Image 1 (cartoon, rainbow, N blue to C red):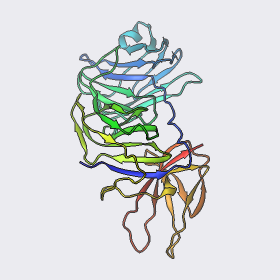
Image 2: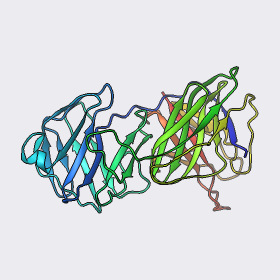
Image 3: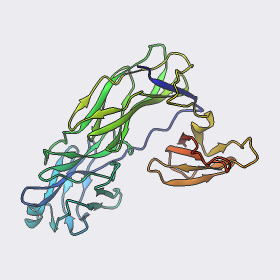
Image 4: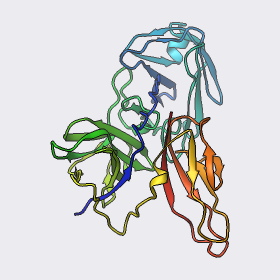
Length: 337
C-alpha cells in the first residue's frame, strides 16, 4: 500500500494548538433513572466550583466543592439532597438534552449537547440505558476532545472503553522533523496524537465508526501532509493497529490521484492571506471557514486581513466560476501570530 504525501513550503514555525482545560468528564442515567455528572481535573489543574451552576433543559443545581489535580467528583441527586456537593435538582432527558456549566470568574464555561453528529468538544452521542457518555481530552488540544459512548460507566475513575487507532511513524535520523501529529477524523471523533521521535503512536478517544487517518508536521522546513490510503474501521472499545507511515527523506513527495497538491499560498499565513488574482476574466473569490464549518471571512483577490482571527487551522474554498458550477478545491490554511 502506498501512503499519499504532499509537501508545502513553510514560511516559519506553525503555532501550536491552544490548550483546552475541561472539567466535565462523564454523564449518564443510572438504573433507577437518576442523572449523574462526573467532574475531573486534569493534571496540574485545580477547580473551584463554589457557586458554579450546572444547568440542563429541565433542572439547575448550584455546586459547592473544590477539585484537586487528577481528582474525580460525581454529582447526583443523592449528593445534592444531602447538600454535600451542592444543592438543587439534576435531571436531563436521556434522549436529547444539553448540559451547561457556568463557573467562576477566570474559568471558562463548558457545555455539551446530545445527540449530535459529528461528535467533538461540545457534541456528544446520547447515553445508552444504564451506560454513559464519557469525554477524552487528549493532550489538552481544543480540536482533540471527544465525547463517546461508554457502556460500562466508570463513576469516580478514569474513563475507558473508547476506541483507538495506532501504528508506527518512522523517518531517517538525518531528517529534521518537528510538530508532528497523527490525526483520525470521522463522524464519531476527531482526535490527534503528538510525536517527537520515530516510533509507535495511539490516537485514543474515538467512538465506533470509520476514520480517515493522516499525518502532518514540519519536515526539513516544509509542511508535510500524508494520508493513509484506506479508511480505518473501529468497533466499540477496539484498538486497530498497523496504520503505519514513513516520512520521505527527499523533498519530492509521492502522490496519487486521491490527493491533489494544494497551492503554496494556502499553507501558513501571518497577519494577511494572499488570494492570487484569477487568470480568467472573472475576478477570483473565496470563503474562509473554521474547523466547525462556519464561514469566518469572505476573501477577495489580493491581501486579506486575518490578524483578528484566532491562531489555528482554517480552510479556503474558492467560489465556482459562472461557466462551471463544479465545486472547487478546499485548501488548508494555518494562521499563526
